[in-house]
Image 1 (tube, rainbow, N blue to C red):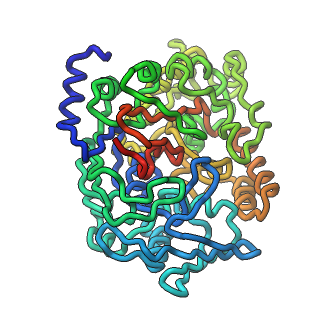
Image 2: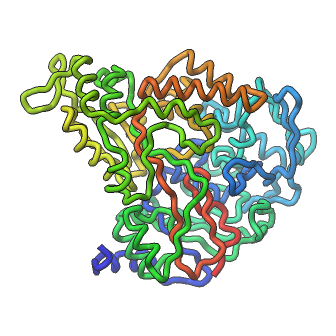
Image 3: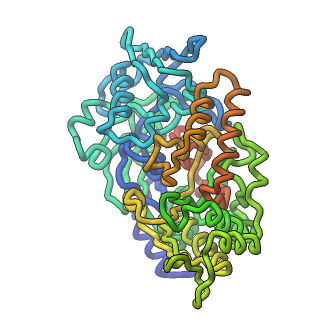
Length: 520
């Protein structure tokens, strides 16, 4: 792989001439656009978080919201009113001064049905937003929302400049976007390169960074390099400064390379799963879903496909995450003979070619996923396991720029993504609330009990009540085998050792996040 002359040449051509004033980064996956409110896609989030800011930031521990654009806040005793005091020294890349009006506009746009924001729920059930003065926002909810501050750290809730949105129209997030972040949107060539430039006026970095701004580089060049071997060769050749998408199967080589440093993002919650669209007849029966889930060997996949750079996942929620329910670890027990029995009971009988059949239909579900990253190899491994029980997965990878759109078409039985999350409540609310049908609730799971428990968890005013509600949700959805949890993915930043002060952050697969302390 590394000896490939063509691979190295390709990497060199992508990197171009290095500049001490340009920070060079690689990604394997591009995004359809860079409008944070209109997507769940993490390839959008990591770039957005560089040029736009949130009211609060997430500290390195992955649990603690800290001041950012909001320098302080208070909450009313009933949990329904948050009062945010804003910084008065912030400006957008365009030079426009940041005020409470920008906050109110951003959240109103997020909640506007015309925006079609799949993560609008992250901002909570907003009743009214008020600005008593230019640097105060009264954020009133219809009911308490136990994780509001945690959710406000997420890219979905970045602050937008109304003038930029209006000027660019449908091209907002494509040809440009204004922000208050340490970097400014400069240019984007889809599937090729994103260029950000330094925001010279920026000086309001959160307390988690030593340097409050501006960043120490004139530009940040992010190249899209889908081929694993090319990314490895480029980092080994010193042509890029860092990447957060170094192929997991080559992490051992990176750790041994004298010019490279490998850092793990900790804590880190990233679940690679395969979900079932329950409204499709082929996977509507819970027994079929369970059979697929218990017929695979997760430990072998973690070791053989990701070379130990992931842990087997038998639950939807990582055991280290907030509000994890231990009882769920008993719901997925790998057992190939039981898997066959479940399919027999569900009426799927082996055909002459070994593939199970029922009512003239073969058990050949379509499986959609993104062509880059870990999923293709994992999907192929699972396909092999499932042949042993008479299930033939029809694998359909898609380029990252169209994968989300293809999944929105609903014409498949199974899909896969690797989802980053902050807590059990975060993950449960993302996927299992019926309000989030058709995306990100691609299971089309509509269950009154689930919805009620999620509502109770969101409205809880104390930790115990929140944990109880989210425990019951986990037991419910795992008992229905709505997903196959497969791997908890490790996340690394691989950097040239000349790059100092770059620390990986776990928030939504970002790793680099703001990059304020990075320097040569």
